[in-house]
Amino acid sequence: MKNSDSRRHEVLERLGVRAEDLLALEGIGPSIDASVFLSGSLVEGMGNQSSDIDVFVVGEAKPTGENIHVAGDAVFSVHMHGKRRVDFEYWRDGAALALAEKLDALTTTDEGSDNVLMEKRLTDEEIAFMHRVRTGVPLLHDERFDRLRSRFEFARLSAYLTEVKLREIDDAVEDVCGMMDDGDVDVGLMRARDLLNVVCDAYGHHLGSTNIRRKWRTKVLEAYRSRDHADEVLGRFWELQFPDGSTVRADREAYRAYAERCVRLANKVTDWILG
Image (cartoon, rainbow, N blue to C red; front, side, top):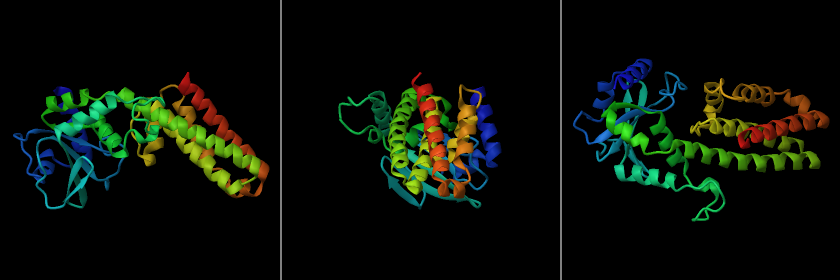
């Protein structure tokens, strides 16, 4: 409990808000039949002072606000706290449990019983919710939140995300190599940039990240800089992401050299991931 209290205090201080003020927006009190927790980019230390505040409510409670919308299994209630938006995301216990069971049964091979493409086996919304649970900080009912979080096998989730990205790497490498042979420099450059992004994502997931927000990909690797090859991948990413574009586009050999460096990095990271 002491650790939860300390973490909660740290996050609320960073956000510059009081827990009671946030909860009052939805009329939430200690008697609520739900786990209530903060999550999102601000909680992870990646957002800024204008970022939304995300509050999750998992249980049998229902939203009370006036600005409500439904997306999949979630019901959102949107408020403003001063000039900042506060999103309350409600999930029923049954939906959260069903998602945990779906993760338990998830396969990372082509032999899935439902025969669905790998990248379609979980939706972005499902992945995002599980990540929010993983990184959340309880506001009420700490023990209930701990039970919720313990129900999800996050190592399986990161392994799944890694496999999805490895397949994307294969596709992008094939495209980049094909563009080199065909001499289609503009499209090849764009696919090479795509490849760099996917490489960055893949290695982050390999190290354990479950964050799929693309804008945070470099922040994710920065958080893992002391792990394995994360620092090298991050350095090479920035080096290759912003070359002298005009020179590369005008000189086919310069483009080929750039594309080959991107492919070499992708192959090296794939080898590291696969051991």
